[in-house]
Image 1 (cartoon, helix red, strand yellow):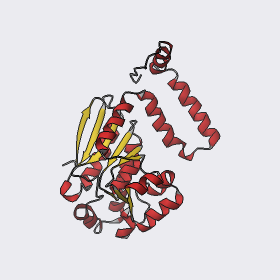
Image 2 (cartoon, helix red, strand yellow):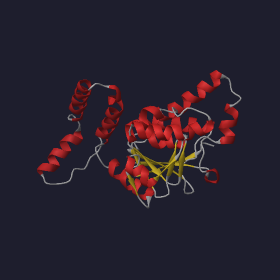
Image 3 (spheres, one colour):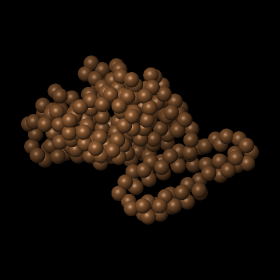
Length: 260
């Protein structure tokens, strides 16, 4: 069992985490399946944007206590390292898939589930959303799956430190105020699907370039970033979409992008 369902509608792929009776936990198998799925999306031209959501009114309860936490206590160091590297590979796959990824967060979003949302490009929350980085609550460091690199860039160093040290829950209103959520909406999945459809109808080659540069410029100096963006923009200026936008402007029409 993969731990998620997959559907494509009009260029938007929908990942739905499943297992509602336990708030959609992750297992060894679902970590690997999600990692492989997002890696494959890099080469899937039928998908131009992705929405991640959960079933049953929750997003994800993180690593399953019975299926993951228990077995981890009996593993050797090499086995543990293989596992922690695999969970990090899921984050790298989401960041490297070349598509805008939107997390539609309803209800519980904790542990590894919170990291899946953090790794997404955009995050929409419902008023019921509760996000927690629970790692310290089980005796682990808060630095899991890239948390100490990504979360400070989203909410700031001090706020990230508080969330990672305490493992406390961050509600929807606080999450929006701190910048974790782009917005809080009643129909979180509907809004996420609408936003994804809007992105999917846009200049998808340029979106992929934007995602790449957002990731690569984290550890660049400003002069290096400016040069990298000059090269990226020159590449985008050679696309047919750029010419389509110009011709649409001359004709006083809205451009219809095709992603090439």
